Amino acid sequence: MKIDLRKYLEERDQMHRSLLRDGPVLTVSRAYGCEANRLVRLLIHRINELGPGALKKHPWKYISKEVIDECAFELGINPHDVDQRILAHSTDGINGLLAGFAHHYEVSDREIMSKVKEVIINYAKRGNVILVGRGGSMVTEGMDNVLRIRLEAPLKWRARVIAGKLGIGDEAAYDLVQHMDENRVRWMEHLTGRTYNEHMFDLVINVEKMSDKETLDVILQVMKHRGMIPSQPLEGKSQKFKVS
Image 1 (tube, rainbow, N blue to C red):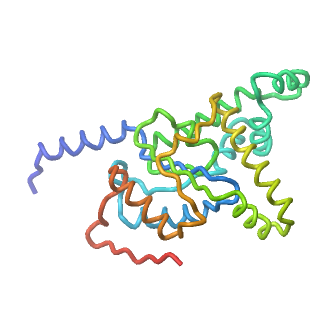
Image 2: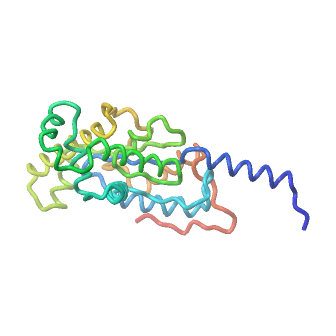
């Protein structure tokens, strides 16, 4: 069979250019009490049913705590320490307090934060990935082909969800939700060295008002419009999927 050399070279060049491009990446940030993992698993299933990606050809996957685990493994420390050291780090007073016992740490806060950002950026450059939490929305600022999603809901609604999940009183749940929201913002700010900007998101979804199916449909539509995923499934693929 004769090979169309021109077509072959064009396809090869197109593939090479796509590998040099960052993304595509979807980041999911969520207020405490807004479930993300269930939604993202359903989203990955829907995306991969469409077949190979529009920009990169490997299947989509989602990453969350794996960022911390991978950093901890590479640095030879405990994953919990990675999380807590970033949360505690600051460039002012807290950093001064840490300096007094920094000799107990073989790895500096700066090294930890640099490694976390490096891992996130590597996943983002590879593309076809959903980054859940871990500061992915802020770390990837300035990169192309990134869609930033924020899951929100009223504080009282989230407190009720947490109260039911943890079996605690409404007042304790309300305080916990506020505390965790503050910790997540502080964690992101310490990691990136920048002030949290609530307007950085492309799409903010109120999960109290939107069902999983509605949320999935909206996100998929935006991703298709931006050329991040195919607009239609490959020939021979069928969408046998139902959101309960």
